[in-house]
Structures are given as structure tokens and as C-alpha cells.
Length: 352
Image 1 (cartoon, rainbow, N blue to C red):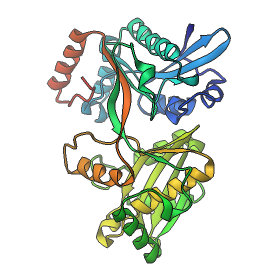
Image 2 (cartoon, rainbow, N blue to C red; image 1 turned 120 degrees about the vertical axis):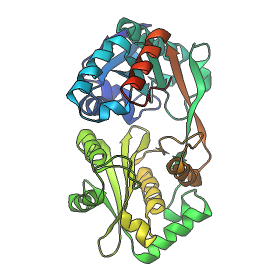
Image 3 (tube, rainbow, N blue to C red; image 1 turned 180 degrees about the vertical axis):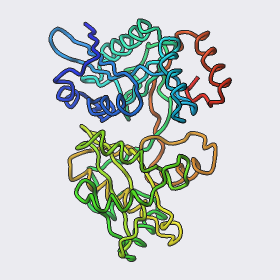
Image 4 (cartoon, one colour; image 1 turned 90 degrees about the horizontal axis):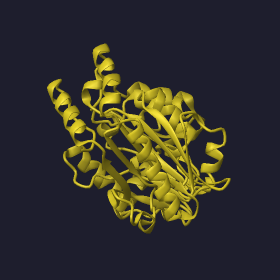
């Protein structure tokens, strides 16, 4: 098998990705464009060919350690960002590789190709997660691979008939009935831009607000992913914004992107979260998307917010393991960067 690398997006990347197993938004040119614009991470396109036929694809990114210090907007910190990239950057990916028939040989070639490229780029660390329900047998024999790097919940949409047939716990059904009786209206974007504008006005700019996503996060996904992003919004009968969920979709998987609830939802005790989840599942079925991925689940909730996320999502199914990969290429440089981040007052979020 032959492995090819490219910094530029191949013109047929998305078309081939859509024909491979586990196709999802995180392995598309849409996601590459969004990440390069939003986070300054550099895309790396990896292809595995068997003769002239593409048997695997992997979209990875070259990045620096995630840290709170880079979120403060300082020019000095921005300069530090680019200084760290050649010193101790990492290569990471999400939802890949996409492989035809889950061929173990193609999986190995794609991952080893990404690791080799990381060494060429002098990265200190490599990590990635596989698509939901990736077969663990395809990872056997690959050093650094694990069948349980995280967990998520996946809703199968093919068997859903209507809102009442979504496989959820009794408490969620009660909340759905409550919103139906109260006349809560569900709208979508881009079909209703005026509704989104009213919701955006209710969101906070500051990070860490209890309502969830900030207006910047919602708008950046809507503008960056365009036709591959849809927002489901719940409003009261008098037009007061209550809650919303942004969904990214491609191929056979739709993934939750952002989630928020306004202060009005807490005041009225009328959050439309469960109703929105059910509406998304029905919409996925209508679009022929068989899987709705709730996009991660805290294995060990560390605070009240994570505990709330966990309790909300487990109403929709049993946690499923997410396969992944991680490998430290230079422990010395990883330790050096961690020490530098502690010195400037940032919290290391790099995963080592």
C-alpha cells in the first residue's frame, strides 16, 4: 500500500470520504477549513492507496498545546503560539481514519503514515479518536491504539417513527410532553435566520457561562461549516428563546456541535433540550442519516457542569467506548512545554 500526504485539500476528498465506512464531518474539507480559520491549526491530508484505488483517508492537524493562555488575545501569546509549533507541536485527528471495509492493513497504514509525518514535522505528541463504533479488531497490533479512549452515546435513527418512539428514559419523555403541552416551537437555521438572531442576543460572550455555548461558538460553526451545520432552536409561544442544539452532519453520522440554554429556560423551568434531541433524531431519519452521535460523554464528571451533561445524555442510551490512538514522540519536549505553560499561568489541556 502507498501513503500520500498533502497540505492542500484534494479536489475529490469529500466525495471519496462519503464512500468510506464511518464517514463523518470531522474528516471532511468543511472541517479542515473551519479549524484552520478558527484555531490556526494546520491541516494534513493522508491517503492510503492500493494501486490506484483509495482505501483509507485521514484528516489530521498540526497544532500547539491547547492552553487557557492562548485565549486571552495577546499579541505576545500569539507569537508564543507559533514559537511552540516547531518546538513541541502535536498532530491530532478526530473521527478517523475512514477505511473501506475496515481493512486492518489500511487502518495501520493511515495511522503509521500520520505518525511518520508527525516525526517529520518534529511534533512531540500524536493523538486521535476513531469514528463511533469503530471495530476494535481493526486496531489489533497497532502500538498506541486502544479501544477505549473515551465514550459517547449513539442514537440509531432508522427505527424511529416519531417523537414518541425515540429510545429515551421516562424523564425525558415527560419533558417532551411538557414542551408539547406548553406550545414550545421548534425552528431551524438556516431556514429561520431571524429566530437565530433572537437566540444569539440571549447568549453570553464570556466563556464559562452556565448557559453553555457562547454566541461566538455558535456563529463560527454556522459560518464555517455552512450547509453542513444545522441549528435546532426551541422558543416559547411568545417567541422567547429557550434552548438550541447545533448539529454537524456528513455521510452516515450527525454529531452534536454546540448546545445552549438561555436564562429564560431556567426561569420558566421549560428547557426544550429533550424535545430538540428527539426532533434531531427524527430529522436524521428523514435525511437518511442512520447514526446521531451525542459527541462525547464525561467518563468521570469533574464538576457540576460535567455531571449535568452526563445525566442529560445517558437518558438516550448506554455509553459506548470510543477507540483512539496516542503516542508520545518526545517526552522531554512535552515536559518542557507543560512547564512553560505553568510559568505563564495557563492550564495545560493537551492530554498528557
